[in-house]
Every structure is written in structure tokens, then in C-alpha cells.
Image (cartoon, rainbow, N blue to C red):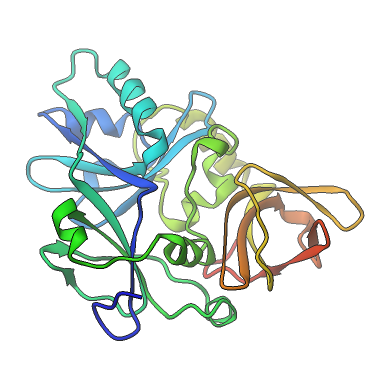
Length: 291
């Protein structure tokens, strides 16, 4: 483990990369593309989704801004397709988007410093106390972006520990395996501050708003755990012990004899729900926010 403070684990998150948007119309352009209110972007990290016209999430991202650009942390495996798709909608807008080849995403679990070298550390949603203890996770979760050179000085660990903390916090990401499977509310994106219902139109907004106005989302992402390491894949169907289909894996992480998974299930059927994968059972655990 690499410590910047006692009890802090630093992870290199190669699964994520950084896009940069520049040009006079960058705010207006992104405001019409993502689920959150880009006009309120600052140097802090903002969660947002990028939807299809049918309101299904193509990707999730974390955004921040400075005086000259807007930056988006996105899954590395999706970056080429996202770049291509976004450029299709630029048309005559004064916007350029590019992949920052030297930017590296770093996650921190434990006591968070304000900075990691020259980089600001953004504090993120943490796990519920019961889940953190059960998963042997220290309190605190954060993220920052550094250069490749700076990363080499950190002796950072692989990303597994950060993803375990992220799943425990119920802070969802969409990767290629779950592309266009879920509406934002189906993975609790609005519950972690990733959707604005007061901004103007964006791609998929009509569907997302309709789901919200219904007043109750029938399917949500819930946290499940097992005291064994289970190989669960994003997008995988899971069932009850009786073999009844019960959910879809949003994200999962297994490390140090523990598995945590965000699984989308029917809210009305959650009472006492236990899922089974092979001979192993997954039991519901508390999220740090109300569902």
C-alpha cells in the first residue's frame, strides 16, 4: 500500500481517462448532452450521465472546469466511441474535444489530503458505516488527476481497492458491458447528484423526466455482499436460490475474500431478497443514501 497519510491507499485507475472540451461554446454544447447542469460547474467534481435518445445511459462521467476548459473523466474503453459520437453533434459549435494522453486518474481510500502533489483531491461519497466495517474499508474516498510523470512518483496500487470502495458507496459507473441497459434512475444516478431536473433539454431528457414524474422508480440499484470472492460481470443476470431472475449487475468488485456488487432489482421485491450465484449467496447491505 502507498500512503500519502496514515491509512490512505493510493490507486492508479487505468480504467478511466480524461477528455478535455475547449472553445467558446463548450458549456452550451455539453449542457445539451449530459444529465447535469454544466452551467454550475466549478473546480469541484460533478457526476453526470450521457444518454441515448431513449434515455438509456451510454456512459457516466465526472466533470470539472477551469477558466479555459471543461474536463470529463470517462471509462477508457469507451473513450474512442464517445469522442466520435460527441464530435458528430458539434456541427457549427465552437467546441473541440480531445483525449488528454498525459492525464492519469488516481483514486484514494482512507484519510484524504487536500492535494496530491500539485493535484486537487476531490472528496467523494463514502460507504455506509456498516458496509465499510464489513468490507474492511477505511473511511474516506477521493479522486484526483495527475500527470504520467507524477503518477510514477506515487508508487500507486492497482485500482481494485478504490472500486471496492466505490461500489460500497453506491456511486455508479456505466462501462461498455452495461451501455444503454439502464435509465439514470435505474442505477440511482440522481440520488448521487448526477441528474438535474431543472436544466433545459438534453439528449434523452424527455424519457428521464417522465420516469421522475411517475414518482416511483420500479427498479433501483441495491448493494449486495458476500464473504467470498465471486466473479461477477457487469451486465450479468442474477437470480434467487429458486432460480427466479431477480437482477442485473451494474458493478462488482471482489478482493481480500470479499465481494460487493451493485445490482439492479425490483424495489418492491427487496424485502428479504437473497441472490445466489452458483453455491454462493449475496445478501443485501445498506447504502449511504435512501433508495
